[in-house]
Image (cartoon, rainbow, N blue to C red):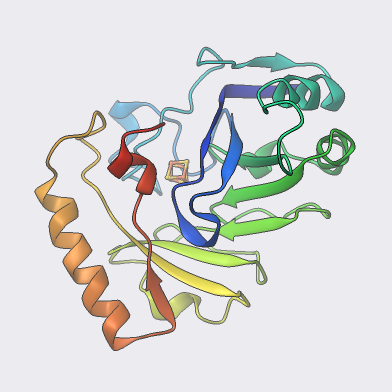
Length: 218
Ligand code: SF4
């Protein structure tokens, strides 16, 4: 049984795949926060801006088999257009994503991208792996395509993660979690300045902005 909060077709807004069309498959649940506001302060990760609780979002649901979920995701890709790409996100997708589902996505013609907090081992067969370390949670994935660190996090300084083998290292300015519906965010503006300064001093790191929020898409 796979539990999916929501799934939608959009453009990837962050990292090295920024601007690429993708079906986002947002899995329910995370291992670093239960998603309840009353428990946020005590969570290992407490700046989350995503609703990953339940299966009641757009195109969400429970899927008994890997093929059923892959077919569901396939319906969201425009027929006959380009190389289908699915981004498995969450919540924490590696709580549910397994080799059977990766094989079903491949069978349906998809390249498979994953955005994970890196605290769980990744199954074989992922085509694009993005690790986004959180606070003092131990990262067990030591090799990936890109590291994307929300910045600043006092317990997750960038220099802690340069021993992860990756093609790209990105800093993503932290937003205020209280501004989920958009609008001016002075916290994010300040953090963008800090991330810019860090990248200028440490050019291994590149700045990534949430393009989907800037242009106003999902
Ligand atoms: S690890 Fe990701 S999904 Fe989980 S609480 Fe943190 S930001 Fe949200």
